[in-house]
Length: 428
Image (cartoon, rainbow, N blue to C red):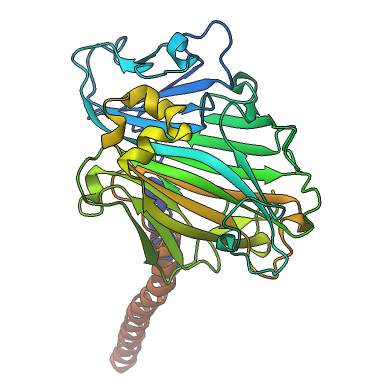
């Protein structure tokens, strides 16, 4: 009974420690305030979401929009005591004009921009992979086997995010693309959604990317697309990752290997595109695992590969002349005088693996990534696994110790009882 009670106490302590560790991870680190189409009273295009994430040391201002080119802009500023004016302002007259420079700005002269970075989604590629190579580089130019969807307002119409978004989930959804294209996207068949967090944890859905209060997760989702005559259709997307850095330290993709696949079974690597390779703690990053999913209910069996191409740095001339950039919220914030100095790199990503059945197998693809500030999260053994291992190794030791003590005590008690009985017989 003594051993049982002792083991019960040990188990209770382990459970308590695990509970404390897990619950502490849900402590809010930032105060989130979400504003949908702030300051817009008429035509807002697809719309703009502004999320202010106020922390003790700094404030992150997230801007997600499909006005112009779909983009996510993150601005890190000092945290002011004046909470009312500790925010961004949006000039919708400029945002709706042909020259958006200066449309996003801070009004308080005490606000200091510490860093800024983000991502632009520029184009979608649909190609007919008749050779089943799952290689986007085999289709370098537009033609009958390759359709390109440009993500700007002249070609793509976006739904009003007021109808699709909430405080912690911003959804940019395509309403329709140019009907003159051989295969058009309609009725929300393409969605880019962003998840906001005020604490650190892991996503509930595969590939269970880790997040903290300085990150946002995005899902790039394709579903129910009429692929036209492309029976072996696959897709890819072009992105531009940018940061305010003007140094010559080029952005780089790190392929981090792992022997642990606890969170994404069968996936032993994670990719990080970092803006400051030599100073990651003070830069931005784009993180993803090389896997996407062919079903809305994500399972290991529905996973297929994500292949990266690049990154390739943009020249000053390309930054100044590219329509995707000039029509984006990025240009609206930096302006014509600074956009040439902003560090930018473009990367392509294709979805699919040879013999996976192509996109047409399930007519669905979902890719998840993370956009954040600081050192990119790295996979590590979870608290639960540590607790299980500790219990597995600790309980046998506890049993041996208490078992040994029990045997020793029992032998001593038995010996003492035998001695007493013998003495009593001699006296009698």
